[in-house]
Every structure is written in C-alpha cells, then in structure tokens.
Length: 115
Image 1 (spheres, rainbow, N blue to C red):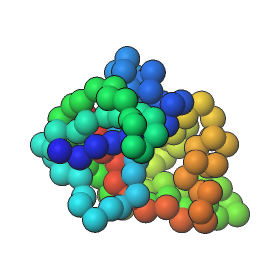
Image 2 (cartoon, rainbow, N blue to C red; image 1 turned 180 degrees about the horizontal axis):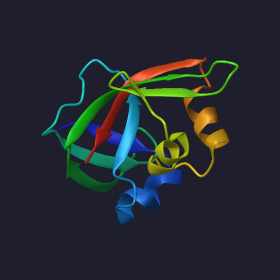
Image 3 (spheres, one colour; image 1 turned 90 degrees about the vertical axis):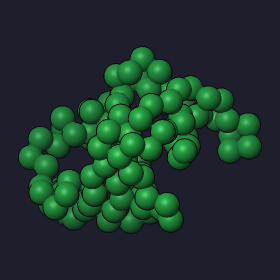
C-alpha cells in the first residue's frame, strides 16, 4: 500500500482525474503493477488523503539535461514528444518541468507510475 504525496500544485489534477501518472525517484520499495496507491497532500506528519487508485503500469524513466536540451527516456526509448510528456505529468511549461526534476543535478532516474 504505497503512499504517494503530491505537492499542492498537482492536487486538483489528481482529484479531477486529469493527472493519471507521476514520476518518482527510485526508492527502496519499488512500485509494482497492482499496488493500491494512496494519494495524499500536505505536511509529512499531517497529510490529507486526496484519493486512491490501482497502479496499472510502471516504467523506468531516465532524464538528462545536457547543454543541448532535455532528453527523456522511458524504458530506454527516447521520448519524441517532450511537450506532451511534461504536460501529461501536470506541468504548465518546460521550464517548470526542468526546475522540478533537475534541481539536484543534470540527471534524474526513477519510475513513472500510472493509474
């Protein structure tokens, strides 16, 4: 029963169902198809439950931010429609997407969890 905590900017999209996936850094217990996902938002010790769903798909994601522009790979295949990719994840601009995932460096690796 993994819990997925969302930043306030994504809560409305999750609740309305317009956001049906999230990208997360790898963690000790990886997400798996069939997991019952619990969605929450708010402070770590007082989160508010905003929904739940069953995980339908999990993909490996690698993102790189070289000087030539962002490159995204899902299951080792390069994403051709980068704008569609970041919009589907709930971002309003490529700059927002870039700031979110590359604040700790030029490489991000993790899982894309869909429900």
